[in-house]
Length: 437
Image (cartoon, rainbow, N blue to C red):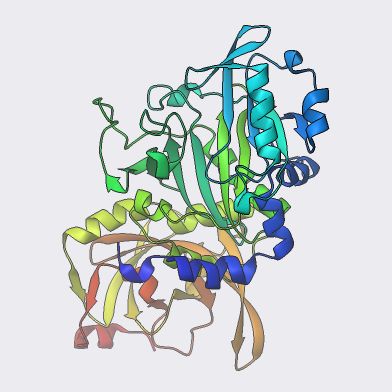
């Protein structure tokens, strides 16, 4: 992982959460009860809340024996999963069994709720609210990987585009909680396929579930497309621009948002072995119309990046300032053309006539538009998903479409697509002869 691509604490605060997230949106994310309100209003799937407690009278007035056999008692403004009691089973009318196999009575629940109201688990120990929420449990896909508790999926969404994701699996060390700082497993997920790629435990890479021979790489996440779409709709509903969306998989109901974060942690970069900063920069100024559109862009931009990085790290290839590349057209055929390698440009650009000839300008191929200033004034340029081969390597990216008819080369490759290459300043004279004026 290159240090230049890593998002640090200061950059997260200054460049993203501080710059894009309004105070009102942060308040919504900081309160699970307010999060419930906006998600309900936007019809976004999330666990049902049975009862809210805002004052001590509510605790003594509530008929606790009417609670279901399984539920979760939570603080509205709790941090890091603190103050949450998850009940999995009823033993008798007044006694339940928690996810950590401890017996808990009605009196215990009352005392714990009063502690929450007094602010025992909130930031700054300020008075808080409590609520009782539907129990989610473990989806069958995760039962052999998670210890007791409910796994969740953290998706970082920026500008309505999911940019990075990880699966968090509770362990014995974490006490059944999906919290990395308490010893849960963090598994990076390929955005395009929903398949786990890497795994970390206590910030160290591992390959197998502790104490077993079960591989953590290659787990297929169910409902992946729906998970990504829900994460974007949740971000939009909250008013956040940069958000960490936590999603659980209900065994019967499917994906549900459990929490929103205005300032999500950065360990997701370790789980994916890739920096967030570069991905965030790539989607900063893209115009996104809907959640489905945002997911489509994410899959086009980040498909196969994990695999490509592993291959690129094995050997560094040297290329010249002008190289022959094979662009894949709409019929999946490679078309050989000469391209200019330009480290001064951030992203790649393709000529509009060439893109049209290759069938890459069809409506279903355009993933976004971008406003650009030119000598003719402000104009909108399409962004298209494009696949090309450079020096034997497959590169999946996006490219801006522009009119390059007065330029020598119809395709320019920017530095975002040159990872793993060294560029020689020399120019092949034969290629200059073949270049189209």
